[in-house]
Length: 74
Image 1: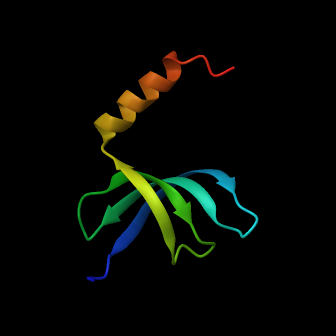
Image 2: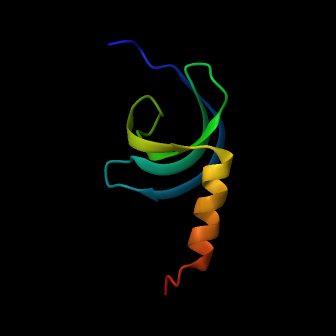
Image 3: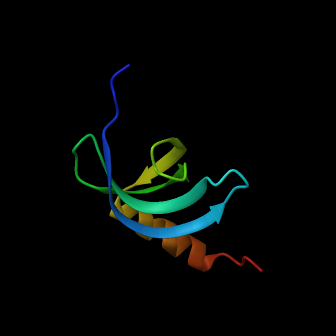
């Protein structure tokens, strides 16, 4: 399996932290030297390992924001 290259271009938000120190984060990440995209996933404390996540374009993130703003989350 080929090595996956990544660079966290911008750390935007840490949403939660597990008992083992992994954090769920929203970041702007460049995967395999491509243009950065918004990325939501769990990361190990030093960002050397990652869990499965979801990668979003700016347009996807805007649609998600608009959808969440319309929801009654109380």
